[in-house]
Length: 285
Image (cartoon, rainbow, N blue to C red; front, side, top):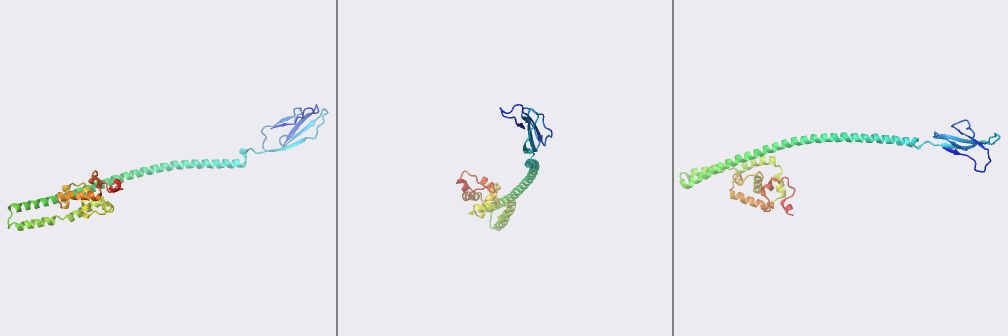
């Protein structure tokens, strides 16, 4: 801070000046003619700058006083300290958020890994169960089909024998054999056993089929279940006690009721019916 109090040009020559800053110094400065005073980095507080003028005879005037106040610098005010506190609090809060986010991501990553491991384990178990059920259905179907084929073959042999070499004496035996074979060919019982195993794996299959294709009959549903298990025409005919021609006609009727085009494969459509979201009518649109 600089104070200039020199007289204007043309003033009385020989004047001398002295000054002092009360609150900072108590003694007067050495007299001079420069008329300036420099104070650097005054601390905050109230001050009074005094200046006196002397003549060549050593007489000094009453000092002129100029009071002033040095304010507190902005970085040392109460608002500044409040800002420092807020900044420090925000810094700690931001660091806390970063740390929490780090541990949260770490926890979520560990949780995802645990879920992946659990899902893989569950998937392996589900795959094993599906394979087991597939094997059970295939084994049961093979057993029923093999048994029916043997029974039908025996009936055909008996009928052939009766036609070629039969007589009235063998007719009662032929009738008993046919009745016995018919009683053993219990398609409803066979279908019930097949249905129990089938629904253990495809629990929603028949519900989806009936909802999407309400015109399907019980025979159509049975045929579609056999086709879904990828059974061939001969195996289906033996399981349902039908002729091969009847099974082929049933396949044709089933394709029409499902609305399949000639380019669509019936077996492929039925294999994925559980996961399809739209029927063939929607696909064509």
